[in-house]
Length: 433
Ligand code: SPD
Image 1 (cartoon, rainbow, N blue to C red):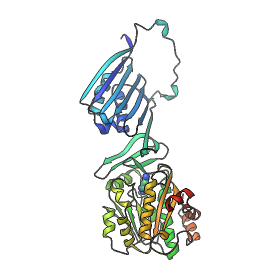
Image 2: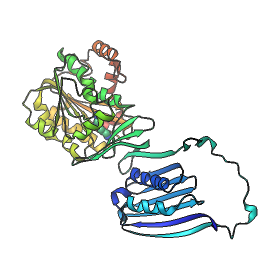
Image 3: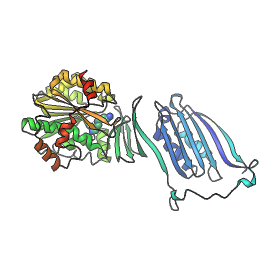
Image 4: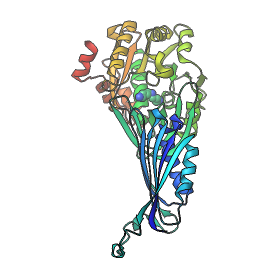
């Protein structure tokens, strides 16, 4: 060999655009392309650009593989650079051609570090400096740097994950994935939005359940017996509802059975109450279900939907909430996830207005809580009451305290109940404008 390395500059054309825009798929293909060629992978870093495109590099003991994709042109620019004789970059080339479904391509091979131009004295003894990453049995430790990003055009929240996709299914409704995050445990994502993570799901599930259950119980002197949950396919909300012994039945209407299946399989701590005999799971359209529900059927309705895109869009309409009001018994409570004053300010305000039109201004209350894995970290719930009581001033604090202690709740307690309804001035202004 007359050179230290071989460098192939590749143009992949007519690629699969979805793959070109899928950071996990691109990274997996690049890592596998290196391994299949006999390279030792040391590290990989990949990034997804907004609105589209992926860049990344796989560092191998024998140099590197790099890529940048333009999904809108179905194009990828790839560098395959290997040193020594043990790795054949053309094997990586063939693998990537198939992985990206490229039907037109070109490649140019260059020798790097030609021995004709290197002087003998350039070869100096260098001390190896990566011993800590090397295990004689397993070889080099791969340190992947893969990020999941939940974003709109201007804001984002990113969580690093191992690169492991434990569940990935696209169906007529949405794309459902379970990813293995580095510091938040396993997480459920729908259409590239975080729904819940093992580490902080209790913030959301306790807050969408207990303020409403406690407010109802305090005002009426009895537990909500008939509860309806719209959405909530991960099972976190019904898990909280099932903590009330006075509950007779919780009906949950989830549109996508894949969410339930994924969570039963990978998030058993969240999905643990599906086998409870009080739980009646219906796979179907919650919007239709509520429109057909008999009047005065439920003490509590919890709308645990996704963001207003795809199947959850109809959960943000006046029709839907009018039907919910009809389905509630007198003194019944509705609570819905209300988006973020910072991330989705327009939806947040519009939903509040819509509820006030349906239930009256005095009977609609906004709560805030910390949603550490939702963009902006500040999330809301909107509560509407079909009755004349107030969820804060009528709260029986002692019972709320007793309940949260007995169940060792991690977020909700009797003081937080009232605190959650206290809004920052800028949020008050948004809602009263
Ligand atoms: N941006 C995320 C809002 C999602 C609300 N629903 C989450 C489902 C958890 N049960």
